[in-house]
Image 1 (cartoon, rainbow over the protein chains, first blue to last red):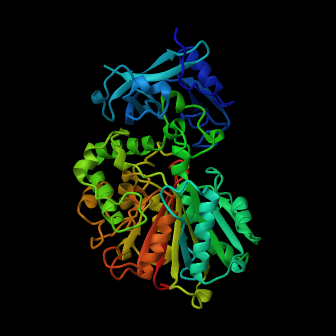
Image 2: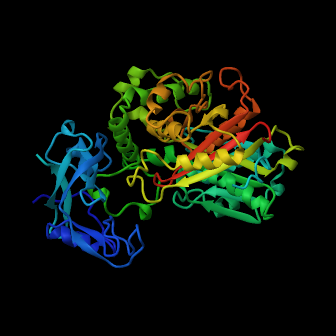
Length: 136
Length: 392
């Protein structure tokens, strides 16, 4: 396996369980016990009602593209061969918006509001990234 | 809303450093030159300056402590603000508040940075957007997906705007072309050759839908202004630019959250500033709008009430932004053509416009009111400043 030269996420105390979920190929979202809302990224209190009572809840993994940009400029060597690549804001069915790549498609196929689903890429032994593909 | 500050304070001096490629000066040096020019223009002396507000720590190149040391100043009020490109307008507003609270009497507000030099020192530097310390870079939910640089945030917003309202790339281009036309009249602008819409459309892509000319220009440069009371301004050298209103809107929930990148915090910033000044968008003679990217101008044209939401594209393409148009905007060329000093030079331009300092090719005829806006802080902060030729 060739060396992985893209940046790897550096989890915070709050996000560690999320990344551990990714390793299990599960997309976990914080969900409030009091008001039922989901949010992302994790924080100690629900941003809607400030409850400290919440849990990591497994997402459906489905959502739609809220908006996206297509990179043509190389900012980092690790992405040189990926150009043009798509960075999108995905609105999950549960509500939160996540930033990630849309993979396995040509940028021309994309538009806002089309459905996508999560996939997981085990990029190193310790890190799994969540990405999205078109729901066909 | 407390109107008691309306017209009570004024900008009495403005200054800028050499702009563009200035490898012999760092950010503090650039700031110092701009400060010297602003203080001298005002007719005050260095000893009269007892307040200092700089754009601060998240772009840690112009900290007030370092600037104050370079300028040899002891003051009774100083700080660095941390609202990104919304900081400079915030600095002017804070100057008024600090003077009003009796903490100081004359405040130097400014910012400088050596972004051209910093990003051109090496091939690696050129590739990076080397405007912040590594410690402040994102650690997750971004870099691992190739999210680098500022353009993507606005490119994503533009894409959504296009989807919702049918906004066209040509309409964003009209903004770039209009500001470039202004820059041809500005001897200090980085880009002074006219830009055609064809050149705009054929430029190399950065982050689609943005090409090269949707993005502002990294330059070395600084701007500074001196704020003091309207009372004191009467005795000074230059016609004052009275501070009639200011306001802020910080959508801290995040750029991609809610509808924050569609209808931005500029709405709240503008409403507060208009209310304080007792005016509305129709009273604005010239706008100096924070133009990190073309689309951010389009959004602000809507959010500051110059056209309805969704109509920023047609409005920009109507010719409104030119000198002689309905809303002469970024008459220096703005950050897209003069150069990006995080809005500081746009405050300077707003002041010069209400002073009627320019010849007919650049001067907005009979300009009484200028709106100057700021934007930044990882895209979520907005600030608005209304300057007047008169006190009301």
